[in-house]
Amino acid sequence: MSTLKEILTRRPVAATIRLTVPAGGARPAPPVGPALGQYRLNLMAFCKDFNARTQKYKPDTPMSVTITAFKDNTFEFTVKSPSVTWYLKKAAGIESGSSRPGHVIATTLSVRHIYEIAKIKQSDPYCQYMSLESISKSIIGTANTMGIKVVKDLD
Image 1 (cartoon, rainbow, N blue to C red):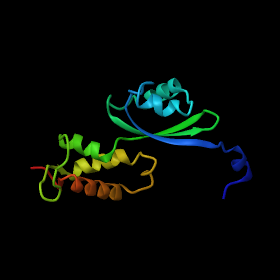
Image 2: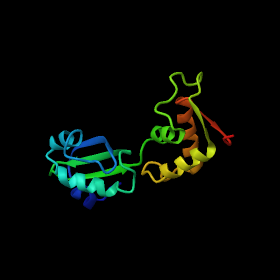
Image 3: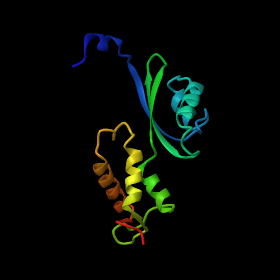
Image 4: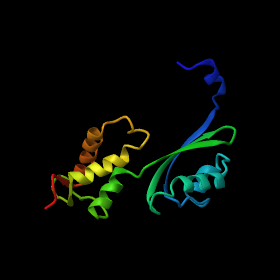
């Protein structure tokens, strides 16, 4: 239950914007410019802030960002780590998954790869309270749907 002070200090939300932006590559050009411009948000403030937060990642890493735009033209945003499918493709060294998952195996990965991806994903806001084992199981399920076989050790 919210307190009265929290209710009175809440700002009315104009929109929630979801974008996928390359790490360190936010510019006022599309796709960032038009998405933020229609809510009259400060483009340069977002770009500088986003690029500063994502400088530890390699350039061109696709980062998922959720921007909450308020009616008073201010905003807040959260940056999530890249998607599991992107990490799996990078670890396997492939461009795309199998065209027929379950029938054709695109490649194989070891459990160690899955564990490393799970450790990275655990820092995400939505996964921070999940156990490493449950995140790993979810990643294995994603790998199976991409046609990537997970083995105990690579030979």
